[in-house]
Image (cartoon, rainbow, N blue to C red; front, side, top):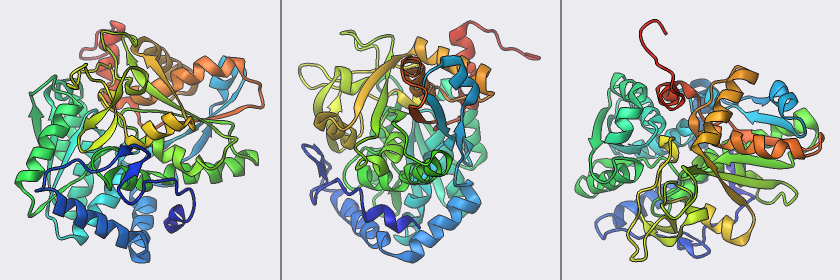
Length: 410
């Protein structure tokens, strides 16, 4: 089933791992042999039916795919205008899209004889997914997580520990996703023999951006088939939130050649996109540079030093973006906008009240943009947004932001 993802929609990267001027491989000499081994293993896996048979079996029986495509009837009525569908990837095992990619990478790791898996995580969902799959296959799991994120994502930290993972708080920088990724890369350089680095987003050195995208493309492939079944045609607009951008590329990629489908990525606008950089909107407020092994848009100062972004959402709190998103932005195939914390919180409440779905703060950003544009669109306009994570992990953060006290009995 999944092999056909590679027979069309091939828009990059090139043989050097580049999407236009973005992407590439900017890593130490120590890591180059590992990167090249991974690339070769993945190239073999793409044409190995036994690899995809295992993926398809686990996607169906372990993850619970296909995830539903849900018509949000009451939300559509409340907003007026466009018809709104949600791709319900928050219903996956572990509660987000992350496990789609983790399964693929850890199957590759096992094929390569790696017994120690390391990962970075921000909101904790990638860490939980990695810990989950490691537990299933009996692999050692170490998760690097910014100390600030450890504090604001306590439920997911506890879940990772229950699953047998070692969670290492990272205190450097601001203690968020960027800093966790820095320490994970340092670990990988130090433990090259038995360690596999499971990157959670469409960033990092080639082949990670393309490989993670390819594993996540199951989202968009299913959405196309489900939309044809529900409406007899493709959506007019697809929308997803973006930190590094894996859930978004997963939805976007199978639609890239469908020129009548508008594509919108939603970045974290934090306290507002301004010169104070109290946001994580790299495409809106950043410029190209190199971070974590690839060239992409980054929040940086005039000297090229990476700036600390800000977002209420731990999963979007990253000062860069996947290189393919940077390329899609520059060629104009996708539109990228920013949503503030305040707007995301309002969308969070709106989704709870109208659909009985508690969203994560990450897709709440995408939903906030849906709420902005839907009222002014005709009723036959179809929007499909990716509900990429559920909000269990964020209830304490949201309660604090809204001034609600949560104690025993609440």
